[in-house]
Length: 74
Figure 1: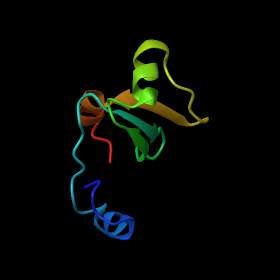
Figure 2: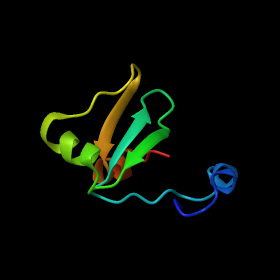
Figure 3: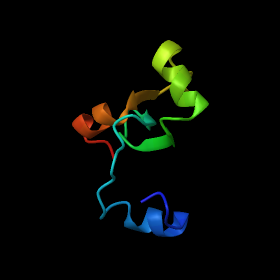
Figure 4: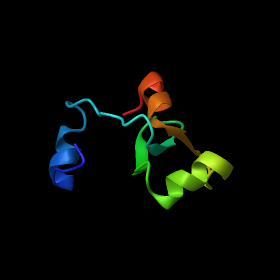
């Protein structure tokens, strides 16, 4: 769903299930369990996350796509 217009993505957010790539990195809001940002597996941020983690804002956390599927994040 990353290739559609942001307005359409927001409109369909409640209806279409999100697909997760197992090796991508996802930042999510802990309380609402909503994805805030995502990084492709080849990005410098994803590479840094694998070795040393990445800084996130208070109330947020990050995980890989495989864990995001298990947690059923949206």
